[in-house]
Image 1 (cartoon, rainbow, N blue to C red):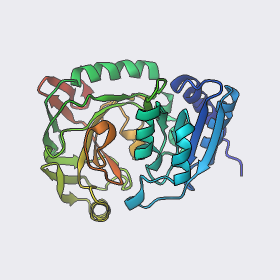
Image 2: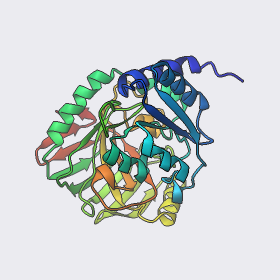
Image 3: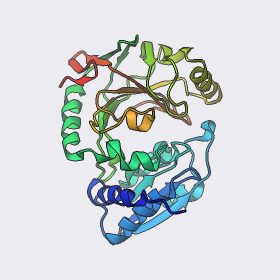
Amino acid sequence: MANNKIVDAIKSSDMIVRELLAVQPGEEVVLVGDPDTDIEMMQALAGVVQSVGAEYNMVIMPTRPPETSLTMTRFIEKGLEDADVFIGLTAASGAACYSPVVQRMRKKRGLRQLSMVLRDLDIWTKGGATADYAAMMKDGIRLKEAWSGARTIHLTSPAGTDLKAELGDSAPFIECGYAKGPGDEGAFSDGEVSLGPNQGTPEGIVVIDGPSAYIGQPATPLKLTFKAGRLVDIAGDMRAGRALRDIVDRVEGADNFAEIGIGLNRASRKEGKFEEEKKAYGTIHIALGRNTGGYGGTVDAQIHIDMVFYNGTVETDKGFLLKDGQLAV
């Protein structure tokens, strides 16, 4: 049965291909999904790619369990050696976003990457997808400048978050949709500035009262305790806690504190979908698991779990970045 949402998907696809990625005639664009991907998303993108004179390649890879959730097929990985643009749309895993092969091709060949993993057609056409991306990029630049050069960071929230970590020489990176230059990466919908703390330094408590990747929205907040950068205790919502414990027990390195991100998208909705909410203005997300690549670490885990909390404050030794969920720069 035809899905009439394809009409709105075409509008989003046009902005992605022409503005955010600036796809040029003759370029090779690879679109990777899995059996859970809304196929209309791939079709809409392919149509716009073709309309600008570029070549599209649509590939479906298998669904991945958590312990192999960042592994694509050898066929896809080999094909990226000749691609100019890579758009990841896997809906069951983050394989097409966090794959080490994609990160390597970005550095080696200047592959441009846009992530739409773990998203559905609804996220693609509403909320954060409708934001003013040019204005959001200006917020991203200001936040990156205020964050750069800081050496310590302190996260707090009314729900009980109280965590400190050290920061190194890795620069915060902006993800506000645009990936026009060689090696650039973005997402859609998008809107955040992120940084990986020095590995092994996060200490304290993070209370997750928003949604998380692979887990969803907890009925009651999850209280996570970290020591020397590792998750050592999970308390709170039993269902969400069991789901997280299962992943941590099965996937080596999934207990590693990998990332801190601040959302900037003023159009994003707060309706329990983590990929939408982690981009929402004023939210904070942390991530567990893989921290190689742009996060500056060495934990090569097969998973990266984003987890959102609300109304937080972020303070560095340079000053406040966020106060009670409001940008402070």
